[in-house]
Length: 426
Image (cartoon, rainbow, N blue to C red; front, side, top):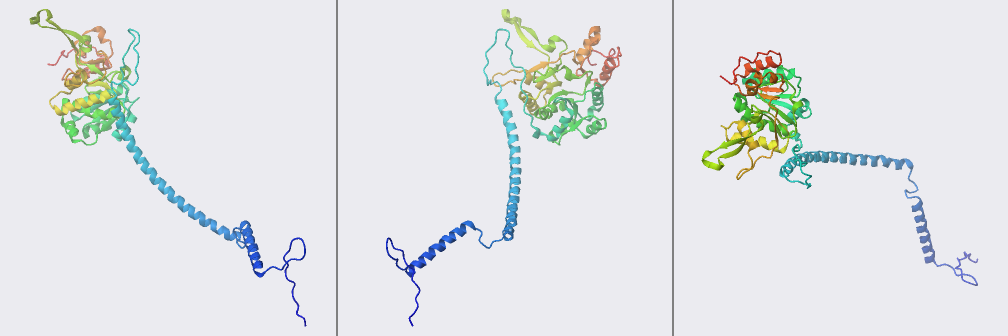
């Protein structure tokens, strides 16, 4: 029998007759090409594969979400840690900025950043009021909270007291309350005064322990305690508050804040007893041996009273306190009022740089010392009609009795209340 053959594949020829059959290698190569092409098409249209199902794919999403959540928690914790670190650094920077600001203000004193042309004759006025310092609450946060509650318009009356002057302190704050003054504070120098003030509903502040201050505050006399105020007041000024410093041998009849000018670093009452001695005068010194030049003109003024003055929170004011406190610590026998005036008034000269602080003398009939009252006012019917803002019993040692008599005269209208006292002390 003849064997049966399959017809071979024919290779197409050009133009004419029949084609030639494909070889075995060519067929394999063609199959590979077709397979690769199909694979590429499938990979393009079915990237997840033919057999991936929706439920199986969904299983992967929660796992990815869990991973993202863990990463987010770590990032949040890291951010919180960085935030705390930045807040600490920010607080340090703020403190440094405050310190640098004070140094810049001090360095800039007397240096004009802007040049001004002088105006016409008689119209030129120099600057009288220095700018206040930037408050630094980090100096004493506890005191800052007290002052925020007590002060009015960043101003308050401050007095220092220990147990030696308890009776006069009671008269002092009783009259302050009577005049309806609310912005005042007692700096208690011992436990007894602190308790006494609290029991009488008087605003009181007790400093943190300080051996140097506490020993003087508890046992010191009037002058020693008076000298402490220059150290203690510094914190008030650094916190940005203006202080009306008051001794406790003072009676209030009106609110003193209604009578302040606030145009100077220091406004102080005077120990002067008339216009010349209080506000200054030309005192001619006579030296006959000089012949034609025998008369020398001098300028005189009675001292400011360091027991009642208004001080603004300025660089010159703080420098004044530092100068006085420094000298009192180096010169323990010095009188604080004498040092206070020397630092305010002495000009610069070889070997000494004077303080550039502006100052104003208070009206001697409104802010009255006891010499003015007992030597002049009580003997003058017209002056008796004036109502002072305060009377300071600074010239007389029998303070308590005279304070009571002054209250009788001005508050209760007893016209003869002052008559039996001598002009001066006995």
